Image (cartoon, rainbow, N blue to C red; front, side):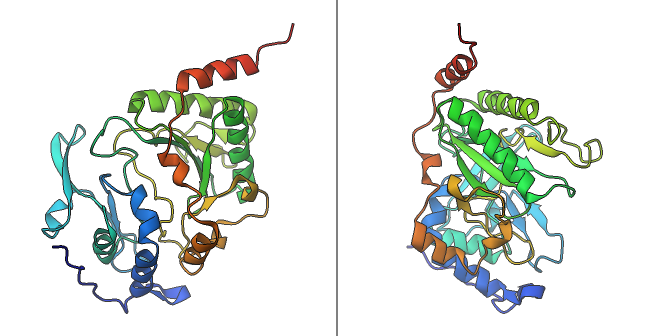
Length: 301
């Protein structure tokens, strides 16, 4: 029998400038648990813990399975980089979500694949990562160019704010391909973007080597074990921003990631429903998509 976890230190202030507490965070996750859990279920969780709030850096805690109560599921996954098994927590229901949040995890960082098929991701992510010199309107321009490319391949992509300064575009894969194939496909898309927007985008990951006004189109998030903040995850950022799924009609100049917060996201979900669930649906046919792209750019005779 599952027992609701003890929720501690609810009065602790996590966002001092906004007077938002740990209790507010727990209440938010409890209110949207039914919507966020499908994006976390059976996925190893890389815990980012901020037990003293956002003004401290916090720390990552992957091997957290030993913390789990008896009712909570865990998964032991071999890590080639550390050459050992890591015991991950799994967030498969509301109580698991609250247990993880109570550890000081403001954000939820799941794998792109589940423990059922750990080598085959459910989706790929194009992570649009600006430098400090870029405007959010420029980030939007990159996302819209990615949408143009996906349209040419007859692929439906799904966009969300990162909850920080960037945008994420997801493409459903439905476990059809390996991580290596997923990374190659996302690399192709990133390369096309940088060819079309050479003054704005780059494939240079290092901020120190990157030109100050360039946006990094990050395809390397599509590797085994990489994580990004889930849809509907809170971020440890000023204003208690949330990683918000967007309709493409909303992805236009003037949009701000600060528009979506712990205070208004539950109401937005009630009004719009879960507009991101397509990322867990039918996966693309990669080979057919590439053929369409090739045909789209064939010169007319």
